[in-house]
Image 1 (cartoon, protein in one colour):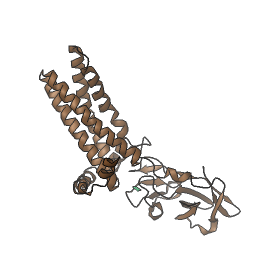
Image 2 (tube, rainbow, N blue to C red):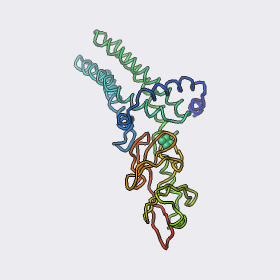
Image 3 (cartoon, rainbow, N blue to C red):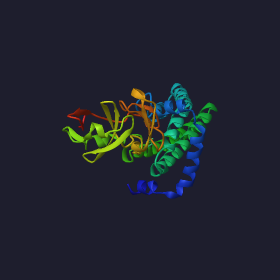
Image 4 (cartoon, rainbow, N blue to C red):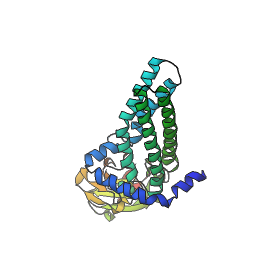
Length: 284
Ligand code: FES
């Protein structure tokens, strides 16, 4: 779609996008809160799950608005209040995810957020009209809100499915690793307690050695493909982690578990064996 391509490339949005990004980054600081909102505990971004609640409420209200009856009008009013009341966590999680996206994604995300803000405003006006006894006006505003929310959802779909926002960017690398055991060098060539980047097939892999034990992760960060090979190592032994130099996602080297976001899912692990003093990798 040409319109969406133009939106992705609309540099004129960057000054607003950059200011909002700085505001979000400066506001949501506690790491624990960030991890909760970004879905570390869930293994997936939390925002798409949270939006189901307000969207379902708004959609249900629209269906009830199409059916005559005083009781249904009251139920629709309640659903709109629920939708407005449950939007805040979805907005917070979405803004945090958005603040750590690439520029082209942030441009689309900015318009996605703007459409949803308009939708929320229209629903707030709809609720006020319904509570004031002006049901017809309340319904019209509700349908207008649903249209704006529909545009927001369309752009959100583009962000996820066409631009890959929120997906684990490291997973496609797995398919390009050889299916058979492939040597990446001798065990003795790997430094103890430090990470090393080697290539298997054409895929960069992050190796970490403790004694005769070696673990391997895909080297490109699952969040936005940052170079984990340039990341700092924190902790030691089985709890040692690598911190992505781009946005700080932290992964346990032993098994790729995500410890801190913004990545919401684990870093893919590559199977390793040490055979005749050689370190060998293959596809899972
Ligand atoms: S690329 Fe964003 S945390 Fe690694």
